[in-house]
Image (cartoon, rainbow, N blue to C red):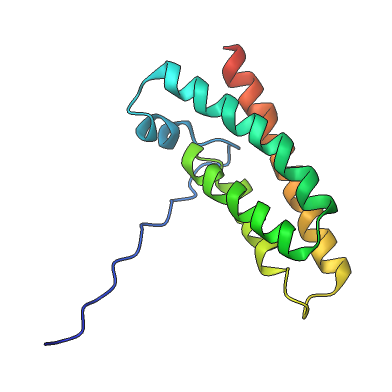
Length: 125
């Protein structure tokens, strides 16, 4: 038998400069507006819990928390947050200077604030 090719998940298209890709969010929630609002609110609360863990935890805790945040971010279409969280995950290695690790966390925090502001606008509308 020949080797079986591994099928990977499709990578999101980063066509939107918005903090939340609402088309992706709508696809993920099957267009159910109440479900969209619920997952946005859940992400907002989760971000409030995870960012402090990322900031104060050791690198392993920060990377694990960033990984969780990344998965949730992809689910709601916050692809900028997902990329920034992935950078924190990658910077956990000892080869990265402490300053580079801190910079990755600061970038994540900034992008996360943009996403949270967009979530607030979406929930208010």
